[in-house]
Image (cartoon, rainbow, N blue to C red; front, side):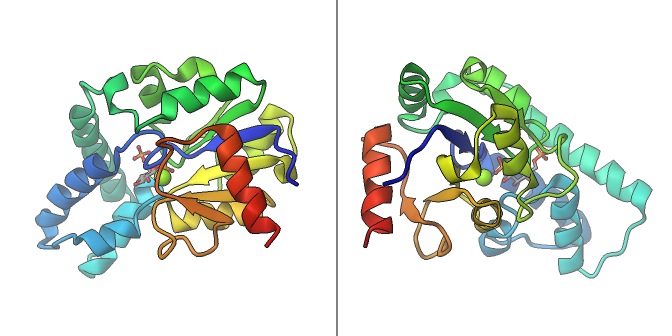
Length: 223
Ligand code: B16
Ligand code: MG
């Protein structure tokens, strides 16, 4: 039986569906270099930092840019992304996320955020859930991005909990790898075909309570 004292949530694709906005902004930018950013390539950008996402896209077109230009295009992409999320509010939270955060908070489970996005603090503020998080680790707080475990290890340290008592919820392969490397339970959000390393995979939080999630985890681990 697992004994869970904390949950750490990824942001994009777990709490809020900003993936479509990142995709739209990168797709638009990629056209400058005659690169068609496909859905499949975009999947590989999930959980990847802004600068590494740009480098991945540039590599698709064999484009080489200097550091100043890379910084320039990162800023440009982010300005576009910020304009796309300008009117974001609570209505963009994924189904049942708010109820689950409230339940965890009511029963004394510690809650952290572990996101590659430097915009994570802004987004939890805009969606009205900031007060649920006792630790927020964003892309601005780490040296090593996912699949390195630093994002989640730092989150657990800040919460004062151990990885073996903590569930990480993640929608990206790199994030699941990061959680497992850090010694956490990893629950995938999405398809089991994409998230093979996860302890369990759920499609989302709809119709689920914390007890229901832990029961599913126990059932799988005891098999
Ligand atoms: P930003 P997550 C990640 O968020 C996104 O999945 C990824 O597509 C994005 O490039 C990255 O954040 C950086 O975002 O440009 O806002 O700093 O899934 O780790 O919450
Ligand atoms: Mg994500």
